Structures are given as structure tokens and as C-alpha cells.
Image 1 (cartoon, rainbow, N blue to C red):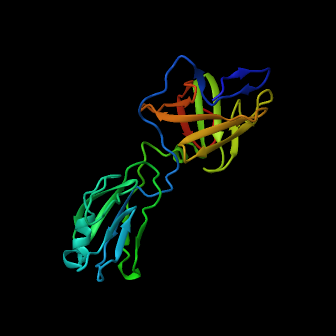
Image 2 (image 1 turned 180 degrees about the horizontal axis):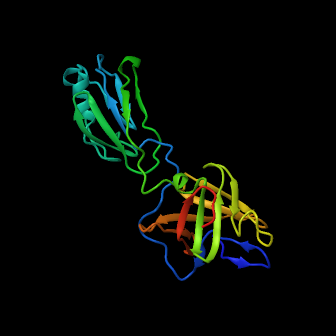
Image 3 (image 1 turned 120 degrees about the vertical axis):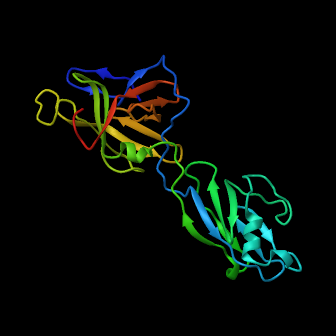
Length: 256
């Protein structure tokens, strides 16, 4: 976010006070919009014909000839259990491996697959025969580190400074994934000298887990990663390592 620059009646705000000497936190990143699945339980079906395949996130099992001990759904679930992301387990999976997921232990014909990173795309299952396609039976909560950026910012007011010395009181209007108005409370809507007014736009990038701010008079956005400091304050950190601190984030549009 950009540093605060004072004009005669307007604060060109960064939503945070910039401290170029500070360093970005190493933990506590607030992740982006939770639109994907964190863990998924799969119910397997029996294979009845040699050569039939079942694939879960890149890991493919091929029924041998004869089908033998890979016939039942329980046996197939057991084969898919306890595999790590990117590690080729060998027979009966050949050179395939799970991609972006790891599998837990089997419970009868069911195995839960867990995403290895936040905001992982939905688990993909398939089969060479429609009668053997596994069923996704339950989906767990999204895997996020801290509060999602959308929950933290959408519709809320970011406060910078302290009582009697607020440098920024910016309301994040709108919804995640769009360019929305950024409105500074200033001295309130009824103020003659410095009334509430839009100062730019803001948007969440859920792919890169960042929030960007584009202020009036500029076409270049300030892009920040947000960290939860664990004490109701948040650090906004840009790619250059400049950090700014939000002393509070309040629900709705209000003065700090």
C-alpha cells in the first residue's frame, strides 16, 4: 500500500501506515477466498473387468487379469489409502501418483483425500467404465491459514492509527473477486471540511492470496499480502517489503 500523503483537505491513503524499515511477518498469512475443497471423502466401487481403471487426482489403478484381489470396493479403497502427494506407489498404480492431494486410511469402501495446499482445485475422480466411477460422498471445510481475506475485508472498515489520530478509516465496499469502491470515512458524511468520500478501488486476488488497492490519480495498484498478528491487528506487506499495520478492522461502514 502507498504511504500516506497529506494534501490541504484530503489524505491519499494507503489503508495502512507504511514502515519501510519493518519486515514482513513469516507466519500468519491470511489466505484468499475459499472457493475450493480442502478435503474430500470418496466412496469406491468394485471393478468387474480386467483392464478397467479408476483414477483419483492423477493416481490410476488398473484392474489386473484376472481381477483377483482388486475386485471389491473395499479392496480398491485399501489400495488407494495412505499415499503421499507426488510419490509413485508402484503396483497396481504403475508410474502414476497423486497430484496436489494425499490420502488417508481406508474405512471400508471410503478414503478421505486431503489437499496439500490452500485453495486447491476440486478433487477429480474418473473411471474407464461409468459403473465404477467413485462417488464423492462428503466434503470437508476449506483449508485456509487464518481468516479468509473476503471475510476479513469485504464490507468492513480498516482502521489505521489510534483514537484521535486516525490516518485511515477505509470501508471496503462490495464483494470479493471484483473491483470495488474504497471509501474513506474521513471526518464523517456530515463534515464540511473533510467528508466521507471514495478514494479508489480495491480487489482480492484469490489465486495469489493478495489484495490490491488502486487510488484515484493512479493506474498502478498497490498489492499486499495480509498477515494476522494474533492480537486483533493485521500487517499488510507489499512485494518490496514495506509493511503497514491495521490497528483494527470493524464490521460495516463506520468511523474508527
